Image (cartoon, rainbow, N blue to C red; front, side, top):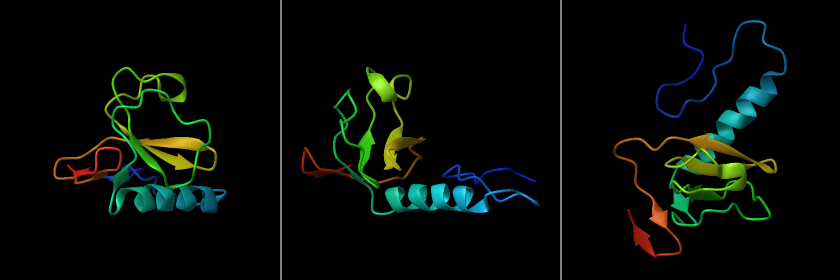
Length: 102
């Protein structure tokens, strides 16, 4: 049995798993960030000082700080930190700082 979903890489619950709410809550944060995706920017290399739950950013290759090594992924703010999700073929997003749909 797989341990995560194929497209959004959300962890699946396992038999006798402790703290199931943690797994479910992270999966819901991923899903909430990816549905009707709005990226604040795709060119900002440094994460914002305050992480807002559900706020999404396209991480550029030259990213620094908490985003270092995550270039090309989508960063979703979650509980003061970040969940990183790879974009998939066919995804659409509104890029807020450019005012364009991509």
